[in-house]
Image (cartoon, rainbow, N blue to C red):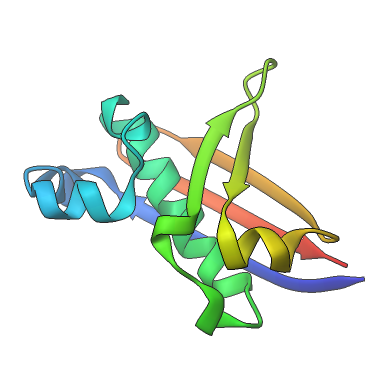
Length: 112
């Protein structure tokens, strides 16, 4: 059963300006993520926003408890910590990220 769907799109020309703000980087991305290129970071930002939109319990949403990695085959995957890890323990999360030169987009589907 689908519990939530979220989608987000990021304009890379606007997002580039945010990247100049260290506080923004530290707040939204893990140390390993912050080393990625602009397109990858924009995609991960869109993924976090899509997750927020898909979450039914938005009070659990905490940026510090979210990281996105790539699996061996290159697919993006959420890693959750603390309360979010407990919440998502028995749920399935579908995550897709795509980007072009000007935009990054992500969709998240949460299943029970």
